[in-house]
Length: 201
Image (cartoon, rainbow, N blue to C red; front, side, top):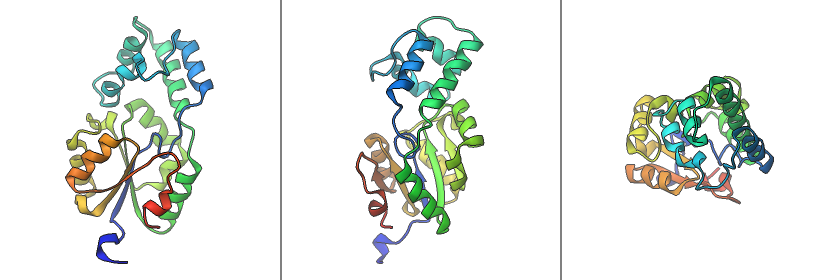
């Protein structure tokens, strides 16, 4: 293996649509029943306000109030939060196999996900995949969200490494582009990807 393809010091993974799969139709239906309106469409209020929620500028109650377009209380907020965490909890077995192999092989693994703080705290406590990682970074806890270059700089500082020593895996081209500009090796995670081959494993 030559220097250009030498293993990185860190593998930095996204969560949604990389470790997780897309929510199922029944997940969106459960959320629709609780919210009283459909939210799956990419132009829905769920997605319109999501970046601010992920970045920690909106609390859970603020976010869901904006999504529903009316003031809501703590009970409904908690219900919507539970359903939202549930719908993003379906896992990609192929990615899990890669994570397990990297972990067992002694690779250094970190996660950087755009995820609101409440969901991040829940997953950190109980999700089976969390144990593969040496470090977990979530936008809602950092107060920044991808593709802001500063979130990558902050993560690198926490890891004590440089961009050249990181391979970043994400499903969003914007995030991949931001990481690549900083000097990271990047892998765009798309449907049908052979992740093992893309990582040179």
